[in-house]
Length: 97
Image 1 (cartoon, rainbow, N blue to C red):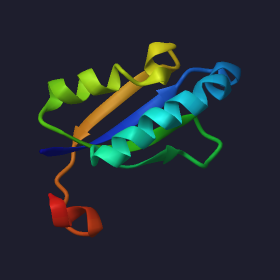
Image 2 (cartoon, rainbow, N blue to C red):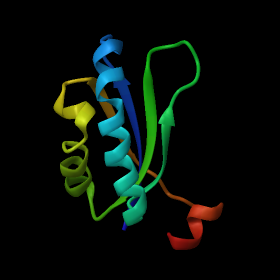
Image 3 (cartoon, one colour):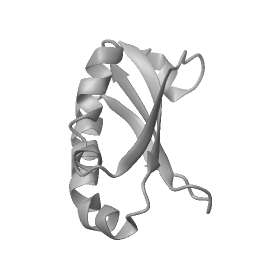
């Protein structure tokens, strides 16, 4: 499995994001339980709204298929997605890498 760092940039519809967030977080929780999601969360600063997700997938295509299932993506709330392959070397997530 390949580890990916995914940066989401959200659009400006915070009200829609708030309404869809419970479904989005339930989707993420399912990925975490399956061992696909290592960690995720929104950026805490006041810059452009977005989040970082660290996921494992077989390849870039499988990851993009997975991200398309995100309720935020389905609702068009993700304005941009940056996907980077991440070579995990140290830390608790590295034990399974």
